[in-house]
Length: 237
Image (tube, rainbow, N blue to C red; front, side, top):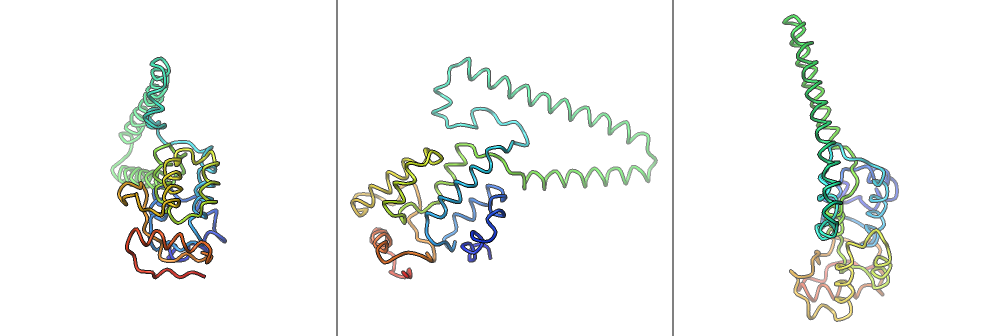
């Protein structure tokens, strides 16, 4: 439902999209049936999502090497890497200690209960664990570099105009997408003749419908369809 009404949701329920867990956003953006005015609106939305998550925190500590790209981690000095790992280890140890203390307290409480109260105690604990699982699934976490790349790969870069691609290249939030932007720009310049589909790094399958593609931009679709040997079925308004 949300896929086929996505353009309406963007206009009227943008806060709902910004609050969605990242794995659901990724699945949504990957859909071929996503109804959007054009691909650039996803650029704007992803930029908003990343910005809105900057003040969010992780529910559990993340290994510092998972928070940045491997090549960036490799550039850090050994003392800097060790210092970050030390903080991570200390945070994990503190959480483990806290959990162990809570289990001990629960054990004491459980021993003091009668049989009927123990049933209720176990039921309450099961309910609390279920709530924690739901909370974890809905929790808004900041975007790591890997997750940013995952989101950028959902964009159909080949269906953006030259001007839009240049604008994205100037956006600091999309530094990690520079290779995709450059590839799309190069593809636009030589009409995809020298590029293999599997080497592009992003999907070149058009969405089911772009609501606002002008006749001047229709050549984008035409060029990509030549590469894919796709039927000329997309409507241009």
